[in-house]
Length: 302
Image (cartoon, rainbow, N blue to C red):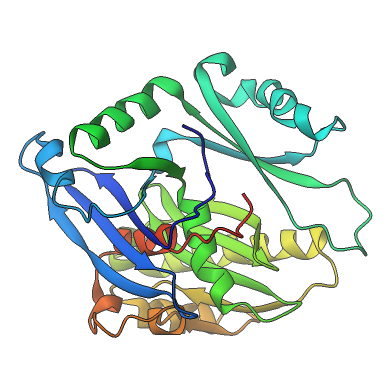
């Protein structure tokens, strides 16, 4: 099994294993506008993952979205080696960020867009996860009768939603919350350019110190946008989209008042056909990333 296997079948079910629950989504890509077929959260009784996983849609391929603590992602200069040697070179470049030996992990890479006007070295994303962890997930899925052949990560799941809303020649910024904090991604021409985990979680924005938390978050978003401008000078950022979540209106208003960029709340109906699920924008955030992972298309690289 490898990360980011291309999908040739029309339908895809994606899921995230979380404490006490599984978030999942199934998307049919046969139509011009992908259609959401199923989405929700399945509770897990104790450690009975087999029973919970067996309740997911079984037809077609299945993708697991790893939790952010289960993998490492780093953006680095692309090694100056032949294409068939890139992964081998990257494996040793990222050894210092791993808590396991590089030979004991699976490593994959994503190319970062490189517009013609840029003069700096091409960039790539390297992602790595421990083989033993991937093997455990494969066994759990197999025992539940799932055809698990794709391993995905939060950043690419978020990318898949963002690129459906891009404007040609302009970058799209998308923000959500994950377990480890705020996740901000910037995409361009269908690919991931920047991915940053920001040190503010959703609970901080709802507590007594929410004003300070909003100020910190605004500063970190602005720094990321400035970094993007330095790396991709000349490429405008169209807007900042916020994933649908609780209290998102207050977050949108706070960011709008402090950022010189249009800030909007993402409506999933703008990204795919959700006609069968009128309340989809009120679902828990993990469902948002499950939908993103289920949107993977066969022409997405990788």
